[in-house]
Amino acid sequence: MSIDMTVHATAPQTRVDTELDRRSAFCREIARSAGAVAMDGFKNRVPGFGMKGPQDFLTETDAAVERHLKARIAEAFPEDGFLGEETGGAIKPEIWVVDPIDGTANFARDIPHFCIAIAFVSNGQTEIGAIYNPALDELYFARRGEGATRNGKPISVAKTGDFDAACVEFGWSNRKSNARYIEVLSNILDQGANVRRGASGALGLAYVADGRSDAYAELHMHPWDCLAGLLMVKEAGGVVGPYLAVGGLADGGAVLAAAPGVAAGMSTATGIPLEAR
Image 1 (spheres, rainbow, N blue to C red):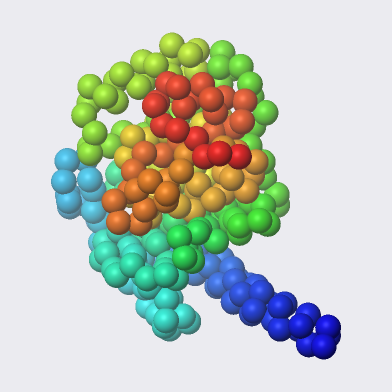
Image 2 (cartoon, helix red, strand yellow; image 1 turned 180 degrees about the horizontal axis):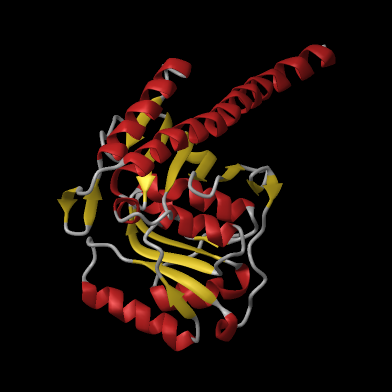
């Protein structure tokens, strides 16, 4: 009897692990294949780009990369949902959340600071995340509970604890007023930090996970821009805000991710709360 009980208790978890193993390997693969599509568009693009709104750029490559990812996911996991920046989608318990090119303004202006961002969310929990900059061939990857890596090597957040030595990134969003943006920017500068903006929120979060930046904050982000990166920062030992618990997949919301030594100060400066640890 005891043997039977053990088998029945562990079998569901084994199935879950096996499915996440499959999705993890698949996520790495499609991040790189999507990167190849993006780089082809980057190298062969023609001058000009479209606009979806103020400072919201669109290129043909955005659509091509999203088509590629959507088709590959539908073929491999037809039961899963898909939510993409360009084509949207229906929210399901298990869903892939995709930004085909984050940093489109950089892409359109021949700046090789852009990425493909992919997250897999199961029942409200981000389980897998990948952020790939094909121009540098840097693939960031995280799986919940298993740490974060860049090109297969473990990464960790910075040990910075003094704002006079901190370098943080603060993203701009047209969903919030310029007055509020400037107020928060001033608050961060008053703490003593150096502030920069790279125009790719997903890479900004990956850089926090990798210790290249000490924090990333933005007053509003869509889920496809930030879910993969928030998972990476947590898995790399950082602190983040309660993004899915507040805005969820439907609405998005404010984002904060930081090394532990500067997290409280960044929360005070931005007004964005931190998850309980």
